[in-house]
Image (cartoon, rainbow, N blue to C red; front, top):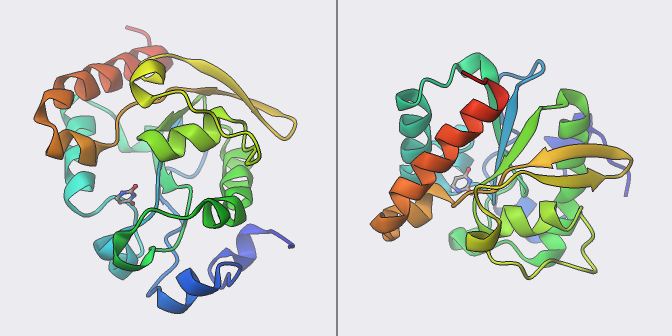
Length: 193
Ligand code: URA
């Protein structure tokens, strides 16, 4: 398969996802050298309609926490591993994440963020495994979160900072304080006080 960001909006590599999508959700935010790139799992219904990541309920949580912590909109970009909505918001299949991952790699290469913040188990496991889909890490999100981890995608090195998915903090309210503390720590990493 031949990957470029130009073909992403018309991509049909995942037949089922492309047949059922309204829009490809490429990403949103500061595209020119953002300090942080947030990476979620896959778009949901609202994201598919608006062609923008994290605009539904979990997006409200994420964006409210970022605003409350004083993140500047110039400092971050938001995207997902999988750029098309899985039908009925099911988890993306491994094959779908594998098909789509090269687009994320191209985005990261173009933006060269100081830190990649993976949101939740799925985005974290693919990134922490350096995009090696034959050897996906089994490390739990609670063991990885809140730490800076060196990763390598192709020949590019990045710092990965995993945290919980904002949706997890809606279903399990006790995770919210940790999520906020992680994002506070992340801001201090790229913008020391
Ligand atoms: N959940 C995600 O992982 N990504 C979105 O864009 C929205 C919800």
